[in-house]
Length: 163
Image (cartoon, rainbow, N blue to C red; front, top):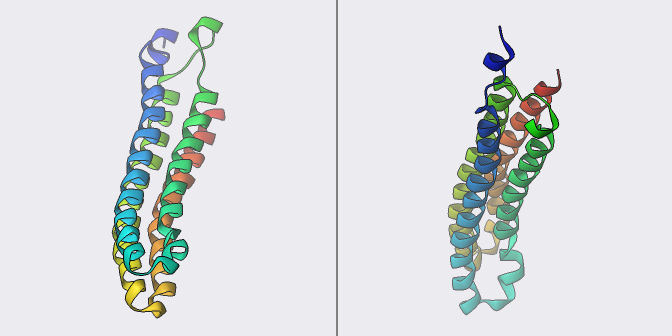
């Protein structure tokens, strides 16, 4: 096969799509989790200002989701090859980078939604019954780990381009 078939000119577009997907979907999930949890925290703060600091856990966990997307986006960008430097960027690499970005981005979106909903309800319940705190944190961890799974898959896929 010719090099033109294996290294089409649109292949970098797929890699850039992976970068965009990682950042857009990951940050959308983090923003939703932060906003939804923030609504609950504001409600708690009006009645029990002493609980605000412990109630910030869902917001911190939502921010971590965006970091997962940022890490993968930086790794993909570091592996992209510039055609101006005479390097080839294969269709296989483009598809792998797109898959990396989509895996971390969409799982980050799902995790952000989960953290937001649990965070909102959890901090409101915590205001009324302090024994709910450990259960809330455990459920938040289970929501967060969805994004972590996407990060792990993206990192595994990203190492495939070096082989």
